Image (tube, rainbow, N blue to C red):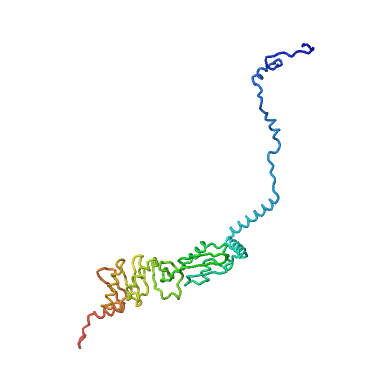
Length: 320
């Protein structure tokens, strides 16, 4: 006891006083308790409440249903092939709004039209009375104009708020091209312009696959020989290699693959000296460099045969 009558606490060397160890206590002493770690059970109790809270905003259901309806309508339009109609209606609605704000096309200036009229050019450009200048794409409009085979070049200019200017360069009808039984009007670069009609009957006729691309050079060569060019009914490209010229009187002139100008010179000389183009013949073959082969018509051949047939001797009286 101390001086006040209390029991004095035992003095130790810093180690906690433990009760007497029983059997198995040595194993427990080998695993000292670690301080500073919270047991998993306590962590689970501490975080048992909700970690995040998420509230659905008001009106989200209406928006979701609207999006679902729009997606269904879009899917139906695509599967039903109605998208062009839907897009056209959307463009019309957009242009109508722009026109209300002063962007309606009040003036459309055209220049360069010859074969095509004003209505055809505006239709090719996709410009209608509902089109607004604000949403008109000049690049797209130019591309649409050049999609017409008659239009070789086009320029499109916008002048706000309501003026549009279009200038076109048209191709010229150059010849008629016949292939596979069909006849079309072509330009000098071989572009097919439209099916042939009576208005183009005076154009030269070229025939055969590939003739549309080679007609310009060949007809330019024939222009140097008016005697032949003025009598030409058709020019036929044979095997994409050489030309035959059919004349109005039915003569078929067969030209070589190369040195065509020399062959035409020979033909002109023969007509000057022998009037060969006025003879009763069907074919003049100029393909061989050292000779000219001529085929007579059936009537001329028969007349020639009769002319050179030996005369039969006259019978004398009393001959049996």
